[in-house]
Amino acid sequence: MNHEKEDKLNIKNFLEEEKVSDIRAYNNGEWINIVVGTVRSQRHISGILKKIKVLKIIKKEDVFGIPENEWVICSVEGIDIHLFTKEKRDYYGIDNLWEQWQYEQ
Image 1: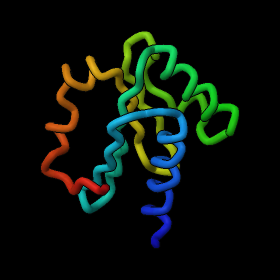
Image 2: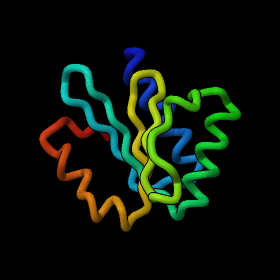
Image 3: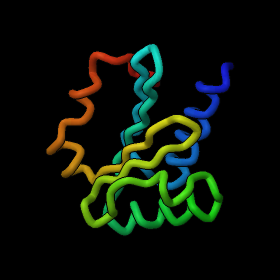
Image 4: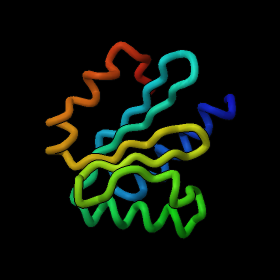
């Protein structure tokens, strides 16, 4: 297994442990790697970010957005993780945006 695929698998496992649902990983075949997941609430986003920071997986400057907006992006090992509430994920149709990219199970 290559390093990039292993990183995505580790991220997916971490998110599953944190009860993130509907996790999808996308790759455009070149340089963009994205993992998208649905969280239950703003508090859920905050808790996940806190745990990630405690584990020193990301730095503060690698987080974009605020939990109150119900969508944050954090960058881990070159992979952008998008965490949304279901309402925001549906509203922005983020999966439709990347549907032409390879979806990795």
